[in-house]
Length: 250
Image (cartoon, rainbow, N blue to C red; front, side, top):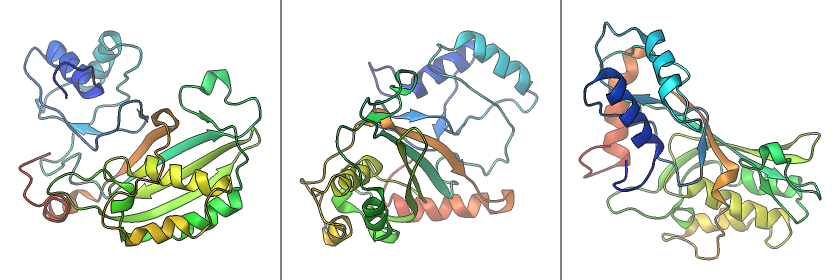
């Protein structure tokens, strides 16, 4: 939530508090930049164990604005933490490579790319970024937070309509990391940078000013993975210790 600004979290908190007639605090799996979409966001709140979850979904469907939906509500163990218990997040970035640009019905979540895109070169460059690295060159640094991340998937595919989609998965992402990775790889795909350039930036300890940040609207958070119930507490504790040293909370 951000004072004075409309956010998805703020809209959900207001709706839940109205429906349940009590203040509700929400913890989400991860922040997204303004303009980034989420079709698989996860959040948790402490609610009554007797709550009718199907009823809550129906009530929220009537109350929420058209651009925010709650697909399901489920009980979880007390140890569950939507942010810190997460094993990995999955993002997709859509790029329309056709001369005519993005389909009008998908223009809100697809970047129209007016340049050639060598997907083979992009995938070769992407392979060099996989694994655990310090992604400082691709992140907007936050005080007290590490920029070391384990990038588990970064691969591009192209469908029959000429839409190239980057599938990106990691244990976590730092601020603007995915959009910066995509921006760097698009520069490789159009021939402005060599294949080895993105991986070479991993030696940097500060953000690389020459890395372009891809527009927000092409990016969507599509899923979050969690461990088995018995491992939730241990995962949350490990994540807090490693990812946010000195931070008081989510």
